[in-house]
Image 1 (cartoon, protein in one colour):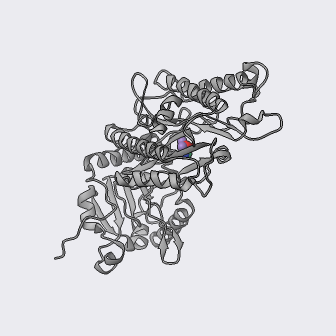
Image 2 (image 1 turned 90 degrees about the vertical axis):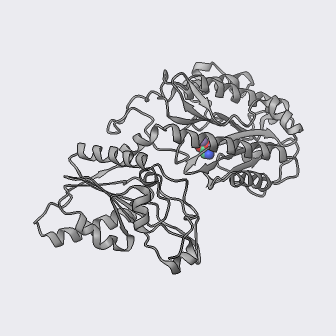
Image 3 (image 1 turned 180 degrees about the vertical axis):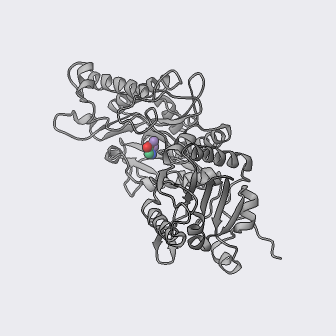
Length: 456
Ligand code: GLY
Ligand code: MN
Ligand code: MN
């Protein structure tokens, strides 16, 4: 019998008990809704061009519940008289595995990931119409990228089940979305998740340090991107958590400028927003620095305002405060700074009240961070059925970014010395009992420290 190597994109040995307890928690919630059957697919594979796929990335909800990273996999959970968890996954196939890599196969997957049983995914279309009867409710993750394809397959299976049972058994008559309950589960990160995120933060910080050290006038954005990617992969990160933003000069005022061919010029600021994904978890760091290693007067003035805004938001990142407190504090500091340097006129309260700062600060001060870079979880108190709910309080174990910025585009009424300055400073924070732990400060953030680092 051939001895197979482990699949190449298998992460460390899964903690079966943890995966089982996540599934048990979801099953308990399904019971609380009256019971039924949940159908949860992983992400679809996507073609890039002929015979060539985009690098596969599992669906985060699916991964959270299974630890399983192969494509073409489905999780079925049954909350009934007897709870069951069933995985449908690719069968073993020696011929195809020579081309595409080793697979677990149902038998080994069931044992290794702790499912009650597992089956060949090729049998899904036959099996699902047989599994659905007898269950009054169908649960699935409706608001995820697999959405439209998933819903049409589910419809087909329900129709087939209806035809074959002919009223002899209940067919799911209610469809419920699992997205919100899973989002709430994923929002609080346990100690192992926090550990991975700290490591991801350290790797990403090292990538930023390396990119800063390599920067100088005449280099291209893509050369700095290469330093980031090298560092991420060298330390075992499987991917970037999002496409790297490396923006020289005026490009820094485009919030999601992809690293391109632009050349850094003497006197430019460079903004890098990049982070790796490690074992399924994202990191997300932004630093802004002078291409020539020395901030100009106007650059330094705006930089210090953004940094002060970040400190103000960090100070309110604790269980004593609600989600939006940090953003409000950052807006106040940024607006005050804009008044002081003469980019805004009038009183602070009026400038905030009328959102006069928005041409210079048009995004929010952070987002949840986790398996997805913009992670799931409501920013307001659940349940989602009430539209104008109050902001939710922060809780230990939540992870978020803190990322104020200022962006000044050329305009007649703006002094030329500020034109094309784009600054964002972004760190990742784990909320603790007392406050928060910044997990990405391995890269300097103070202007003087950045200058020191760049001097070498
Ligand atoms: N990198 C995307 C963001 O900072 O939200
Ligand atoms: Mn971010
Ligand atoms: Mn970012």
